[in-house]
Length: 273
Image (cartoon, rainbow, N blue to C red; front, side, top):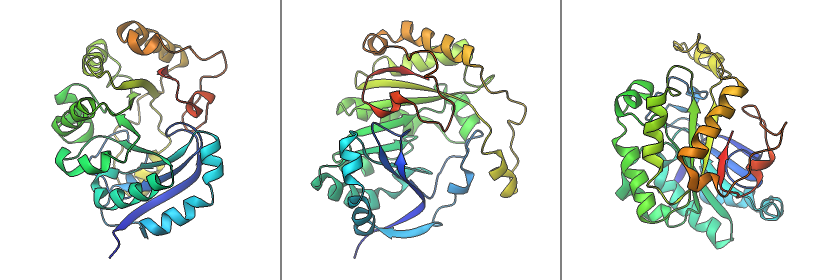
């Protein structure tokens, strides 16, 4: 009997979730309750459309020429995709037989023992660090950071390629102490090839309202481009092993949330906005 995946939505021409053009599967269900989440409609476990691995692979096959020619592949996001490891394992096994690049976009909130086999068929992990300070991590997303940290340590142990994602939220994640702790977390991870600094936005606020949820960040401003550039320069100094292999984007290439940029379409290491 085939494992069933609970799917929230699918994007067939994704350019923001890994290298190249990608088929992005957003799975349903998440154990975190991040204050800045722009997809709270993915939280509920067991909701969404039921699909099998064979069903998705047959659909993906029709797009393979686009994905392979661009150096792309398939990314599974969420929600939290590692909640559905029993579904991901057969899916990724089938994709690797087809020579498809696979990626997971995750918070790392998982029991390492339960995801080890699946990681053998995963080419890239996009690891979203909610906050590097344990107390502030608990405050921002309602759960301990112990599992994400254990997951990150295991990725380093097996030398799994990782892109770090970190959302810059004024007043919550952008103070000097928080940024220093983020540097302390990333520095020992020699398997990290890229840091993506993502400016906070409130475009998902309407979803909270629609679900009858209280959104606590209504007064938080969107970071200015100048602030984001200063932060990129800061990390270029504190994480020189990343910056030494990257070139800053030319003027006009910095992109807004949800908009593709050229840097997302390749595998260049570095620090990006």
